[in-house]
Length: 350
Ligand code: F0G
Image (cartoon, helix red, strand yellow):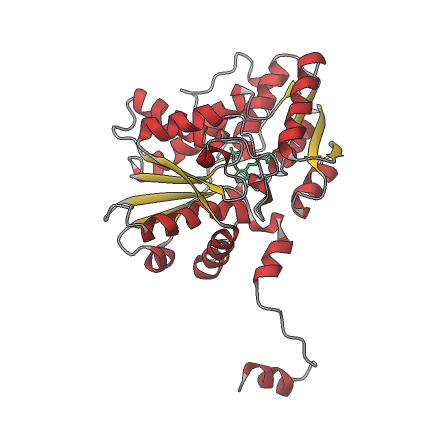
């Protein structure tokens, strides 16, 4: 039976007292081959989707949250706090509930997908909507956690990165070696940092010999790393990565540079096109931000930068059901008709 990432990787995660481990059996997500999508985007590669939407709270955040909340329990903490564009808050609320801790989540008012808000609320977090963006929310929660006895569970907490490394371990366990390219959306830049740390840790442990190139993609209206300066008013349809001043900025640049990779940006239209294409081509439904990795693959293929014969892994960071509004917006309207066979056949053109 799968026991969650902490117990699945005892060489990498150790707890003196097993009872401190807080898990909802996260991880072990599928690495889905995507041949139909590859045929459309780039027929010269083998494409795999790391579908992180199948974690317990439907995003990759659970891998980091199991470590962060377990370590908080180990340290005797009674409450956790985070800023979030939605997924971190859903995950923090869930793991805090599981551990019997109080969770406070601070989110930008009006800018988080409906499903994520519902998750944080029903899992019993104190939800604070601020009249500002994620970067401002993060500044507030950092100050609070510095001055009050509450544990910060944003990815500034190193245990979050530690746990998120497990996704790289799983990719290697399935493929045997890392892919040539690993592509990710970049928001606060913790996940690209974590994957790179994970691949390096696996190599240092002698489990793999090669390392992938890390390719990260920001949304054009929220691309501080690409532009080389803080974006004061980030804007994108991909609200999960609507971030203008990423906490792990320097570490993401290090992952890019050490791996011989790149960080580029994609437009909202490119994100939405990829979002629609992966769902309608492979039956895999992710949220808009997740599709930035695929939009990046499309862009780089057009530029001729993806080597023929490569294996490419794109991480789909969160489940599409979190954001039904955008799915409905980009899709054809359902057809309404009377409850008669003839009328339905008529609609179908028979
Ligand atoms: N994809 C999704 C679905 C996300 O929720 C996030 C980040 C990212 C990609 C980017 O990952 O921040 O590690 O570079 N969401 C955070 C949150 C900021 O609050 O849920 P990153």
